[in-house]
Every structure is written in C-alpha cells, then in structure tokens.
Length: 86
Image (cartoon, rainbow, N blue to C red; front, side, top):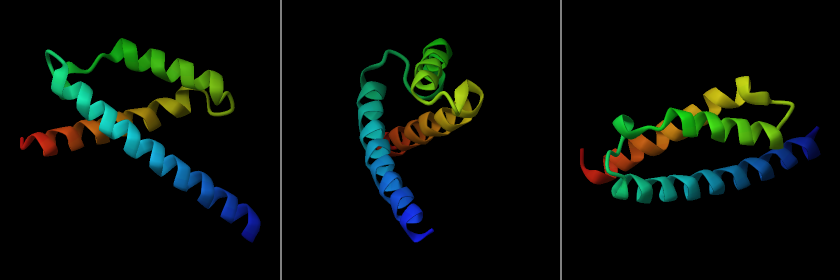
C-alpha cells in the first residue's frame, strides 16, 4: 500500500509541474488573444483537446476528462485575470 501511494505521489508531483507549466502558457495566450478570458473561450477547440486526451487516457474517456479539463482551463483563466489585475 505504501509503495502504491508513493507512486501516486510521484505522479501527482509531475502533474502539478505540468499544470503550472500549462497555466503559464495559457496566460501568455490570454495576453495575445484578440478576446481573452472567459469570453474568448473556444469550446470547439476544448472539445477537440478532450478528444485527443481521451486517446491517451482511454480508461477515463471524454466524459470523465471533460470536467477535469474544464477545471484546468478555468483555473488558468482565473489566474490570468488575477495577474492582469482584473
């Protein structure tokens, strides 16, 4: 059990690093988009992203990945707004 939890902890650490990297990149995109923030969301692109991720994580599938990615995207948008001083 302890070994399994340690393995999960290592994956979570890597996931945290990837989420931070994604938030930074998304923040850059928000600054250069013609319409940034929540108003500038491209839902078709987000659906395509989830579909591509489902290929890599078939056991999760689109239905489970969609709310996860929505949360990731919204967290990045909130962060970008905070950093922009809104």
